[in-house]
Image 1 (cartoon, one colour):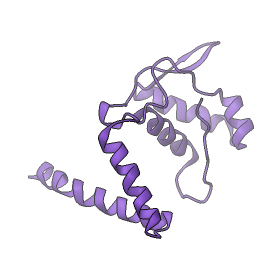
Image 2 (cartoon, helix red, strand yellow):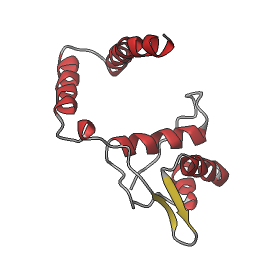
Image 3 (tube, rainbow, N blue to C red):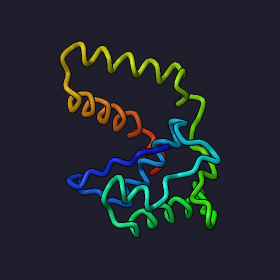
Length: 134
């Protein structure tokens, strides 16, 4: 089951952090169709956030068709965002993990790696954005 980590200093609304973490787990295949999300009560006990915040996040995920609420049973994943390229043994994923290991061995801090990856993503998708505009 997913465990939410809330960063109160991130500047990102708490409900959006929950939405993003669920989507992340769905993309990586950590959550699959039929899996139950923690109840609002369980999330509140683990994170000390308002239960309405959890419900708002789950409602947003429901509007996107990713989860469905079953009265008396809980909230369940209705579809996955995982692809074969994001599978644990996928070549791209294992290559990226090897690159991160090499970056750490080269003495880069987590923040350095995050900056490099963000820059690569921005550069890699900038041509996509330009072609969408034209």
